[in-house]
Image (cartoon, rainbow, N blue to C red; front, side, top):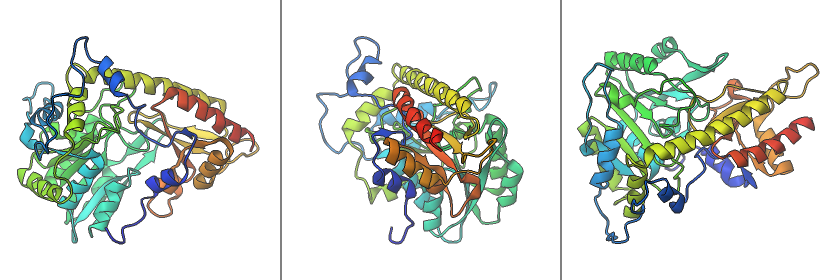
Length: 400
């Protein structure tokens, strides 16, 4: 990867070590003991003591791949036929970041055009560009109550050589969620131009509020669809390095599997066993309920924080994912100050309080982007840590 641009997000987090870390995006991680307690009484633990520590199945254990296929299978409509995936549609990878890297490098190259939802996790548009593809950014726009995605704007970005449309649903860093109606419109557009739809669903099923959760994109019937995910973010298991690629196109899966041979012989069987335990029908609903409750309490804390500081902060509450995107304004008489320099502000907060936040414009922008200026990303996966962090953040705001 010689000459690839700096990955600002991870570089920032590594450089600015915080006492109170609000820089991440995963829900408060579980210990093995806590994970076991979420299972019904009498359930064997997540680690099989009799496991033979061989390489295991190169593509991932059959049990784990079958379960992931099941989670991505659904009825295409309330009255429609049930769509079934199998283990053959799934490849296990060391985390979703490797899933994305393998899939993106297998999909695009010089001469291709890629459209990527923006802002989003930078890997999703940097890697295609590094592969020699032209990348256009489909912007989420800040509305009154939600981040909005214009389908008309997307249609205007499509070219004759558009190969892939990439979305991140729920979205990092904004917490925006593309609803089912938008996903169906995406499929209609992609099908008309034979474009691959690529959905990074690493935060699924972390959906907040009463709005119906959209189905997995791959379950909606369009054959030219690929999804990636992991147990890291929504399940609070980032130390379990298990991610996946799910696709219907067997030729594409073969290319991804071939690329995988050059990077990973096999994922740790210990990690795969813990992931299978967490994703099991008996345990997964309990993890999701626990993590949604954690995020709901954190969102309530942030809502109160914004209400106390209306002249200094703005936000749209996240509809999904494990982060909130908050805009900070300069102090001004009568309010309405200009957006702060988010990089300088985040560095100041860390220096004065030990609280680590991610400067959104610095870490997520493609070049100089005025629309992202002043935004900071704040983790909502740990209520107590957030409470402490907001106290420090508020002290900085009140000091001018």
